Amino acid sequence: MEPRTTTGPSEVADVVIVGGGAAGCVVAGRLAAGSDREIVLLEAGSVADARRSPMPGGAFAALNDEILHTDVTVPQPELGGRKIAVLTGKALGGGSSVNMLAWFQGDPADYDGWLAAGAEGWGWADVRPVFQRIEHNAAGAGEFHGAGGPMAIDFARDIEPGLLRFVAAGEQVGLPVSHDLNGKDRVGVGLSPTNIRNGARHSVVDGYLTPVAHRPGLSVRGDSPVERILIEDGRATGVRLADGTVIRAREKVVLAAGALKTPKLLMLSGVGPAEHLRAHGIDVVADSPGVGQNLHDHPMVPAVWQVHSGRTLLDAQDEQSQEAYRLLGRGPLSAFPTVAAFFPPADGDGAPEVQGLFYLIGLDGDLQPLDEPAVTVTVALLTPRSRGTLRLASADPAAAPIVDPGYLTDPGDLPRLREGVRRVAELMAAPAARKVSGARVFPAEIASDEALDEWIRQNVQTQWHPCGTCRMGTDPLAVVTPRLAVHGVENLMVADNSVMPAVTRGNTHAPAVLIGERAAEFILGG
Image (cartoon, rainbow, N blue to C red; front, side, top):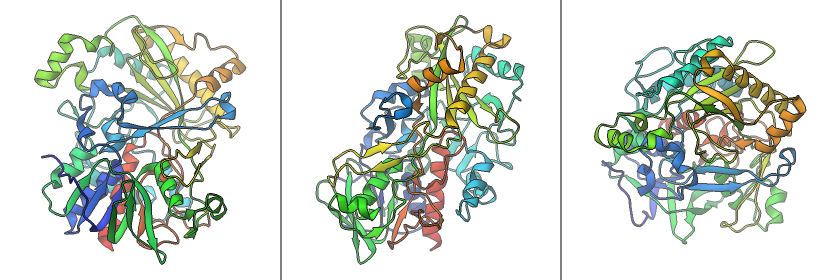
């Protein structure tokens, strides 16, 4: 059953949710299932596009699709003045409808770090049972996992045997082999857990919205960008859409538009750094200097090696593979198989610091597919210290914001990313990897630290994990409370990755679902 959609919004609802991405769909689904509230979920992109990319083996095809928001950073001084495109989902389901299907909870140390930073109730002991509630894990319920939850978690099936050689190569260079990178062994090498069910992408639309599509109180509206939050006497009372439509909220407005769109919308509505707002002629509703601060992401570089043995995703585009997927949901296109390596700090043990994701397809520096058999390893710094900002360019809601992540501006980030590239190169030189892969394609060589640093600066990309711009806490720069309520405005919440004090060690889809779960829990609990 498809989520029910409307051609025109309800003029009044109990809860208005802005943003139909991962967290927004979770909030809407949980509220619809757990209460009789009238809920309007507003998505700037298309509702119909939620299932345009169900085939896991076609995940990379969405990167240039119109179902993505493309924000562009200002020139980054530490990257040779390059501008970086930051892609985020623009369809119902958000990133879960277009991402690479990876499901990483993050490390327990991430959540304990949030707790230490003032996010009471967000330590690992607090969030672990929430992940259990979220998951329908093929491995069954246990200490780290749940069964029967909305989100399907499984390993890819029909895996190309050559991909497993990289697991063996990781073991040869001293990484422990992990049978569950979301379990007790989060440092190591193993298969990436994925959101795949019966050979198809399993998004938050499938897990949270479709089961409640029959609920009369739930209205889902696509192509409905919001331009202002309506705030009267310090209380959020609704939203105004770009077409002028006003939707009032009796109880709450929940912002779930993502780490770039949520702070922009807050500032357009008068919530943000007072001087910045006044400079754009915006009346200040709440002076919140932390709005748009703390922007960060996982900086990533793609390294590429030739493949001389076995099939790659290039081979999987043949007629035989297409037919196998169409008829049975099987074959190489039924999965987006990925080996993941999580490396500990170079100077000792501890939570992982660098992630390598191995894809059996060659990608150039702009992440476009190469026409030769290759394996790409995206090397990402999991614990960046660099921080940037998001600011308004003008008071025009249609104007793009000024996005400045400040990539590699902290002097400690580049050496740690360089070390990660060297450790991946060591793994790719191991005997098991050499049975599959050949000469390095990109970069052509890894020589001195200085040369490698220059290559990194010229090829760093975002891993599309922006976060932190409305971080939770209780200090003067915190934007929301640990219960996700916006400081200084009643009846207004934020429920997306902008509330993270620091990015988690891994892909950020699972934490976004977690944040949506907690937001719904807070609303239902009063």
